[in-house]
Length: 194
Image (cartoon, rainbow, N blue to C red; front, top):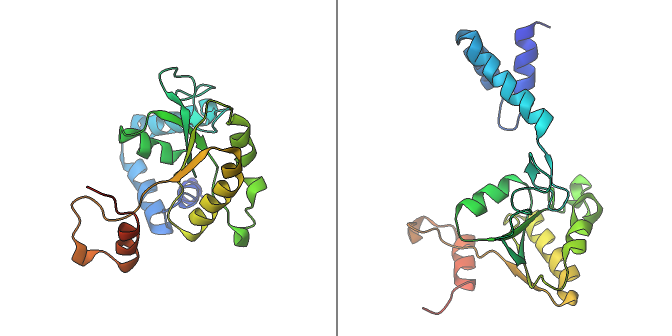
């Protein structure tokens, strides 16, 4: 196998990258200046060497504890539970949440052999002291995400901690005529007084 084929094979292992796209990326790197390809290689190498999981929340970070866990200005009474570390960026960039995070590392999926022991549930439970008043479950609105939310509610509710779920429904600027029935049903179920 040639170097070109090796690189294309590595690109094809990335999520969302098929064989054709992998070869396009490889050939793009062959066309650019060698310094540009080396810059990409150095960035990947630096990421592999320096990025680790936070020992508290399991976020990906260059520091341990991460920038969220070590920030004294964050609200320590609320923990937002997410499936993956990439979900933190989406929530935090909204500016609507100033609490702490906890990364599960996936969601319950019995068909894939993922149960509670494969997720970071035990470390979440160990973080729940008398200061934590609310756990926001921000798993995806999939069957697995809903099962994970129900499981977390079941184990956290007896502890007297308020367990909430992100609201779901119609996006801002969306048209009702284009929304699917499930989205409209969730929006109706989650309606609030104005």
